Length: 309
Image 1 (cartoon, helix red, strand yellow):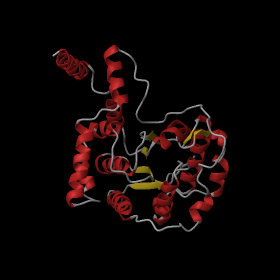
Image 2 (cartoon, one colour; image 1 turned 90 degrees about the horizontal axis):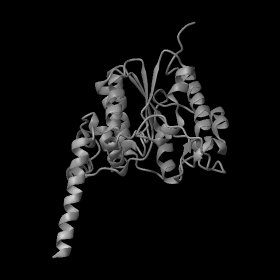
Image 3 (cartoon, one colour; image 1 turned 180 degrees about the vertical axis):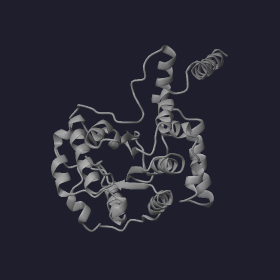
Image 4 (cartoon, helix red, strand yellow; image 1 turned 45 degrees about the horizontal axis):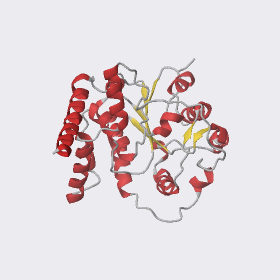
């Protein structure tokens, strides 16, 4: 009986704790900031959609210093993969005035973190419609179920921590998106950097890129129909050979007008172990160099043209 009462008391505490969070915590601050950022975009905005590699490696302020009269917005989100990036980019093309989007290539993963779901849900995006493009039948229903579970039932530790801090009046110190520099340097070698010869070599095995191409071609077609431009970027670092096996042939299959082509000078300038926070991310010093090299390539390839003096 005592054990039963303890279980009831414990369950009651959990329910009370959850209700307290939902009643007294304001809407998650990061969701509000994300939605506000999207609402502030216009036809001068240049948006970078990607993962934590974009978050750590692309400084929107540094880009603005190099290329005036544009609003640069880093929408890198921790652990974002191809599908969340696609969903957000599709929304930006369809529902905002943004005319230029830079999109990070990554693996196609059908699982969403609850942080991703929190940001996606803040824009009321229609995820199942996007899934229709690359799945059908029972597999689509499985994906819908997976997304629904993440959407309605799961909260990440970070989200819960932020809500508790909101109750206690503490500032949220872990933003979920945007440029996030770090001064750390925990890497002693350059092995995780992409190399120019990897881009030009013949892949060892043939990878089925059909689903990837459907998503990319959908974005290209939608952007072209609205006189907009989406530019695909290959990440400068990768700690997983399996990722390279996919994104390198995928990048090479994209037409020149829809990708940011990297050159030998780019690799020469960014490839230093001291520029890395860890094996997959630039630190602050590396981000500055990396961002300036991206600005050079963007201008050289005329995705943006500087105003006349």
